[in-house]
Each structure stands twice: as structure tokens, then as C-alpha cells.
Image 1 (cartoon, helix red, strand yellow):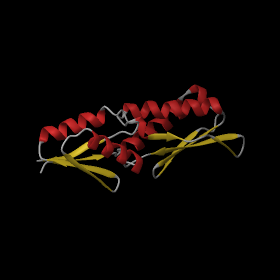
Image 2 (image 1 turned 180 degrees about the horizontal axis):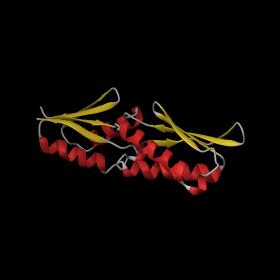
Image 3 (image 1 turned 60 degrees about the vertical axis):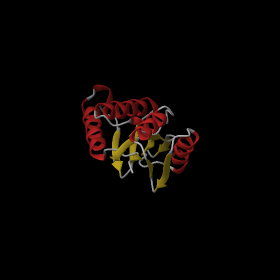
Length: 161
């Protein structure tokens, strides 16, 4: 029986390469000279440290630009509220979301069931498996899910006959 998996994965080496590019640009740009701006990655989190709100916003834009260049979907980034840190600096955490959360998975399954296409879908950890008898039904399910315009970046893999 044909099936495929709906997943949400981010290429972490590409994220690291993009952050290396951001660090290099911060060290060479004239408007960052003498500032204490830095970017570091801790597991699935990016920490931005900046002198003031303007520089924090510039670093945020640099991160988005460099990730886009590396073809990483920036919809997986969740910018948290900036907070004040020691020495009159600003710190901001950026979460890198991986895997499909329960609400999104349930929304996908509900959409597939309400479409009246003869498919079975199930949540398996942080991914959703969709299976059916016809390959065309599976392809129409992919189109249906893409039309949902979810903010979460999704990939469709393990398409089996």
C-alpha cells in the first residue's frame, strides 16, 4: 500500500554555516565596530547578544538573510521576546523548531479526513504518515496540505509504492 511521511526537519549544518557567515559579517562590518554583538548556537537555539535594539534588529535580519541564502526555511525560527542582560546589553533567544507539533499534526489529519479522500493518516512521534490505495490520492493529499499554508515548514519524504 503506497504511503509517505510528512516531516519537518532543518538542516543543522546549513544553520551552522549561516551563523558562521553572520559572525564573519559582524566582525567586518563598519557599523558593528567596537560593539559587543555576538551570535552563538546551543543545540536547537540561537542566542543573539547585542548592545542596543537597533543592533539586535540588524543581527536578526542578518540571520534571516544568511539562512535564506543557505536554503533553510526561516519559518522554522521562533524569535522570542528580547530581554535585558548584564552591562546594558540585550539578549534574544531564537528557537529552531523541528518536528511537527501535535496541534499541526491534528490539523493535517483533520483536513485529510474532511476531504473525503480514501486515505489513512496517523501521528508517529513528530511526523505524520499518510497511506492509501492509490498513488493519485496521496499526491492530491500533498496538494491539499500545501494549500493549508501552514507557517511550519514541511517536507514530504519516504514516498513508497
